[in-house]
Amino acid sequence: MTKVCPAGDCSGGTAGRQSDMTAGMLEQLPEAHKKVVGIPKRCSYCGCVYDGVTKQIFDFFDNYNLGKGWTPSRSILEF
Ligand SMILES: [Zn+2]
Image 1 (cartoon, rainbow, N blue to C red):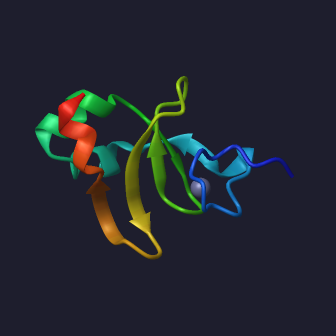
Image 2: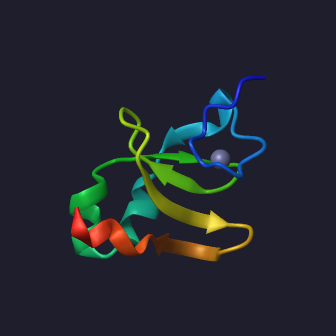
Image 3: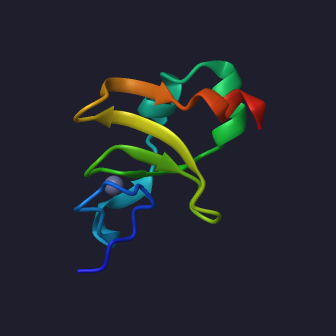
């Protein structure tokens, strides 16, 4: 199985675990972040949220280590 998820420490991010972020997840993002991320892909294994084309990582949503919900990288508002 080939890893597709761009997160460096993700060990199970195969193609079948990548999908668009759901509307319910997007609703929980702050307005400023919604504008930045658009409709990103998310890895259901590690929670990595990223741009499906450029594979730029926006950060994580429901990550085992970082916790539930949206934990944006500090740089997200600098884009
Ligand atoms: Zn992953």
